[in-house]
Length: 314
Image (cartoon, rainbow, N blue to C red; front, top):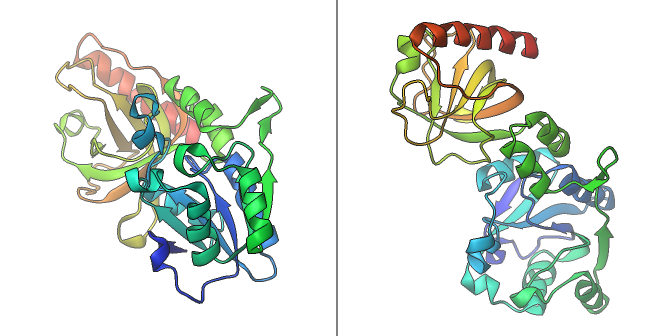
């Protein structure tokens, strides 16, 4: 997948294209419905392009109301690539972009840079200064500039009669319900970051863990122990390891002052991942986070966590 970070980077001979525009936070099943429609529309050889942002626009417009991201920019680009997008225009959302009138945004991006013949958006899509742009404005501009607008309806979960959304996914992850989050995402929820040195207490206890840097990407689920996978993505490779994953502050020891994500790769004691970038995928919650009355009780529980993880992932 080609990645552009400014309309000026798009070659002059680019296009024609079918463009899907949105925040794509999570690249969940609702987002992929838009992308899948774009791929169908482009089946005669047009280029499928996603136009999105490097951060939630609310982080600039209303930071007091901005929720945490479900995924970060690196994750977003990888997931869009997996979804079958040919190129992504990842725009830096800053005060200058926020102030750009809707018509000017559409001309610069959709018409001049991408030479779109079809533009796909969700029904609640808004763009341009003050959120003045909407699907109706795009439709009127399309009549003038030669592109068609396709408004894609929401994807709804039948069992809950609720629209699939990043908000719902955050709610599920905040409750530790990674199973529901996975159904909404169409994949296991995950975080991505660099493996860094920790207190090495897990190694002392016989369960060495890969500790992720605090500035990782992705929404970290509720404190607890999870069965999942650690995927080593260093150097372009993808090696998946079954893992028991701990999220929290290790209350038994009371000396970890910020939440951390650490993964014990099952049956591996000499795996050196320091400095590697990894993806940690959460498959199922094993238990909540608990303070134990001593090391012996903790070791018994850790052994049980590992066996339950092994059973879940089998």
